[in-house]
Structures are given as C-alpha cells and as structure tokens.
Length: 201
Image 1 (cartoon, helix red, strand yellow):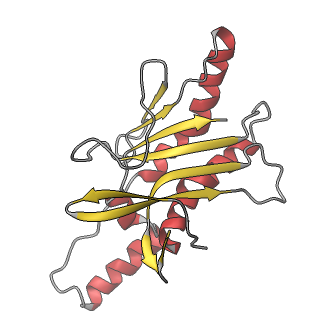
Image 2: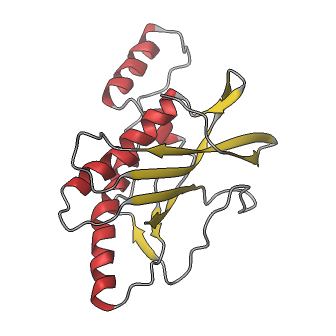
Image 3: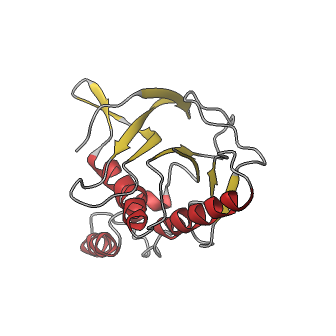
C-alpha cells in the first residue's frame, strides 16, 4: 500500500520532484535473513494532501529489488546481514547533485558491473565495511551473488511498433499484449535511476 515517507525535493526540468524513502520488510512467516530494506530516492506524488509512493511505483520497486533480494537471501545459509540501505541514483542528473544525501563512492567500495548489457541498471556499488583479507573476499562474493541478479530485472522488453492512432483497436491490443508480457515495461524504458549504492548493516 502507498505510504507517506520522509521527503526530499529535487529540481528537475524546472519542476520540483519530491523523493521519498520506502521501507520494505519480508513476509514475517518466512525464515528471513535480511529483515529490512530501505530505498532512498523514490519519486513521490501528492495525494490527499501528503506525498506518497504510488501503488505502481511501490509494486515496481518491490517486484524488482526488494522481493528478489529477500528471496535470494533466504537461500544463503551463511548470510548474517540484517538490513540494507539502498540509494537510487541517476548518474545523468544535470548538475550531478541531489537534495537528498547520497554517499560518496571511492576506490574502497565494491563495484558490481552489469552482466546484462541491455539493462537500464548500469552499476551497483556496495559501500566498504572495512573488512580485510579472506573475510573481505567472502563479503565480496556474497555481495555479488546477492545483488548481481538485479541487473536482469531492469532489461526493457522489445517494444511493439507504434501506431499514430493511439485510440485504435490495434494500439489497444499492443498495449494489452505488452502489459501481459511485462507489466513494468514502460517504467523500465524510462527508469528514474541507473545505479544503486548499497550500505550493508
């Protein structure tokens, strides 16, 4: 369900966009390793006098980020992570700055490169936790195993031919077919972020 969250304003194309923070938790009936995922930088919309995350956006983020992570983590017996904080970052932002705080990424942080060339998600950075040696290599392997599968979730499906008469039966049919193949096709083609920065707690 949509919910109010902490909001941050960012000016985009002369129109203010309010970014919210979403907190997602897994089904309590499952044996979950990760207990909470916080997503920062989710576009909100005004409804009933307050900013909320729309049902569509909430479902999109849940289906393509949080649910796959929760599901994968349950199959990783060695995992001892409790909480993830994930910043959604648009590297094409005109002035390279945001009104909500984004961690600075440097050489100590672990970069996971996309293994899906067509993905709209281009990169993932996991913030350094100051581990060393074998413990650090094990942490890297865990992060890659858990997060790299996310790239394939943001591959836009092939687009049906466009028709000039957007009210025509043929147009309606193509819209229906696309929605059946991938209900999030339009959102993947106009994704509002292209990188993730992840902090593990």
